[in-house]
Image (cartoon, rainbow, N blue to C red; front, side):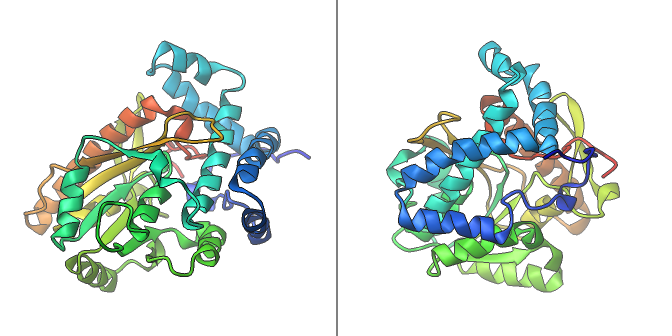
Length: 328
């Protein structure tokens, strides 16, 4: 069983990494029958299998870890350069999928999630005052923990916070369907990035005015929009960032936050997570022309914060495609 020759593609052209629906359905069945600990153990051989037979996964993992090795601590650099660095990276991803399932199945031990002494107090205060917030997430760590916390009243709020996630539904349709099956009571709404238009902006404004939370990942470029991407230094090379997410964040004129949930140990059967909340300092109080410039400033600020946390936990950044390519 061998891969065909691997060629870099835009991330949206890759098949969904969470596998087909029936593979995901099997995970759901195992989750419902066995203790979560069993799924955690299974994540290790599943990650090893993916490492052996996915040339794409190995290639892109090695590309990123090679860049990270030049910028991280000596001990972490040794792990990045190790022949088994990609295996560690892929198993870490496999474990993160299990933890996403745990979160939406209401089995994740939220006592294992630790907020920091940062801007989380400001975030909670805004929500308590009925003010909506816009959260720019990433594929670093496990942002499902934030959505799960909001849905299950674990953020310190006296009520569930409605969350709207803007995602590429085509790429995550199987996993999204599984989340719905796991918890039909979830307060998560999903909007496809392919459906964004003027009507979407109005809908989001209504949701934010009602004190809800909107999330979108900032580390994915838009399909067919390479000429509009902003090139920003990231791990020693210019990488394209899509301005759309950042422009939308400022357009809503509500507080904007960058949030990352990072596992303390990359590979652990009993994970502990640190939740980091960083409030954006770029003002949204400006006209349309100025907003374009400020959205680029916001993107650069986001990239700097993302790089900082990626250096801290390089094996928890799960973008398995050529993030630096300007051609795809």
